[in-house]
Length: 518
Image (cartoon, helix red, strand yellow):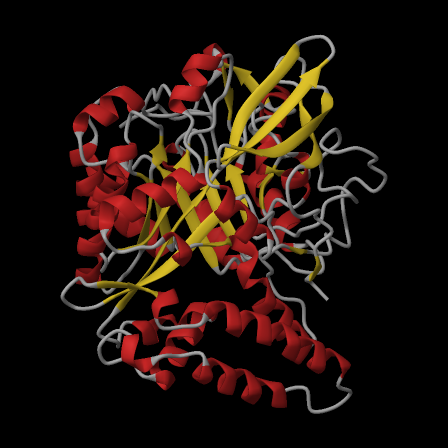
């Protein structure tokens, strides 16, 4: 079994554990409702009381936690006797989820100087850049994770595209069996050189995770230190040109959203994505995570939550209702079902229900966008698939007969009158096969509609830190000593990033490798 009933306490108020923003000690925290918002408050004996918004919509908060599922952790944790989270990450015996998406930092060097970057690459005064063989060993650690080997990897940084052996890394990732190979990038090298784009595709790159903060240059000047909008557009155009060489690569737009800076652009970003849906397959908004010291006034002014994101999408697009959005683990019952039928471990999205919200859009040829919730009874389907999982697990023979039951259920939950033009029940099932199977993705191109994931992941900072989220994290960093560390422990909280980079770095003055070229 890879999915189980969640141990999370539901309802408000509730107690949890957090960290003191000043000293980093584990302290008790309380999550409660106040004026329709969900707040988190905690007190450190030495540094006083801290209060922040956890989610800005209590109704969505309560809906999300109804879809909580826990994983079973990993069978081969690096840390086998951890007692408290997040003091000894590795993964450890306390962690409840396997790695769904792995981040591997290739370098802390960058060809930009972004004020909001949590990697803080060039200000550190040292270069963190694992050698090629170290990178290979880290990838092998991910592939050896049990019971579910990691299959999706994202190379990050710094700016990973300036790593001296970038193409070799991509080739090796494909060779080791990663089925989804991504790079998190500012897009500069993709914009400046079509040959770089082409060589990346040939080497095995599947997806460009592109920083994209809006469609106004002022936003880039504030957030990234220079005008970059045309760079982003050029990168997308170069990726589109791959067709001329019978190659392909997709793009995920990744806006970092700060209240009062670019939250008014949430709808415009999605509109741009829809206009470029032949290349752009998802928009993954990331509400800002505050690093370093910040006063309370600045924090309150800039704070942007997942439910603020839903609010802006509803108000700025005329596409959504807030009911269209569900938490990431809503799809965990599907993983549970396939495990029950096939008796083989599968990837399970068992993150905390308050880490992310998302939905799928189906976009017709004329650009009309329809959320999946308009023509699929999502809650009925997932609730019933959970019951089918129970039956399949208890069956001793002919488990695969429950696949037919699942197909019948899906047809029952499908409303053809509200579906995109030209879509019927069987075509929708073929679409799902394309999403769930790497072999079926080419089938999606045959249909007259496009699919696009629209959602957000809110990575934590020291002010809204909830250790229950860290325990269930599914996005992890792998580091040179073989440890695998949850995202929000690596970049905030204990900040393992600083520890790891200092241990495996050299002074900037001694670095003899590549330049931070644009």
